[in-house]
Length: 122
Image (cartoon, rainbow, N blue to C red; front, top):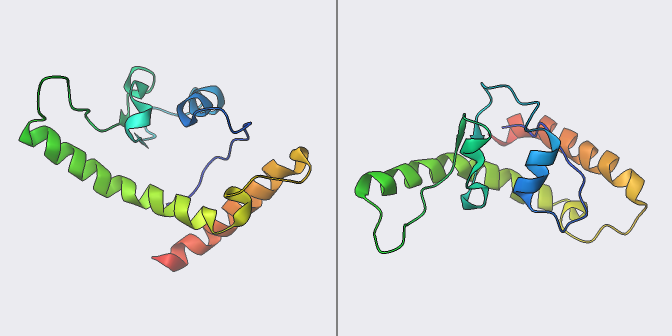
């Protein structure tokens, strides 16, 4: 799994909003997006995407819905591992205290380092 895009934001912007504002329109239809429950509604914007099924009010999830959520979470765990590895670099974890115009460059360098290391981690 490789990081394909880094987007700079103020920190108060939700991940889904950042995705919509940055590259969602540029993604091809063959790109698969796996999101967590915070990305509900992405199917309306990008058809080749999957999010977990939320439990409706006054009803339990069916066994098929639970199985779907489990399979999706098993595929998404790799994304969460990428997030964890990026937070090892403290620049991605804490408040950035240097000049803002250099942050995007530094985060892209960290993504490049991760992309080089990713095949070694498997």
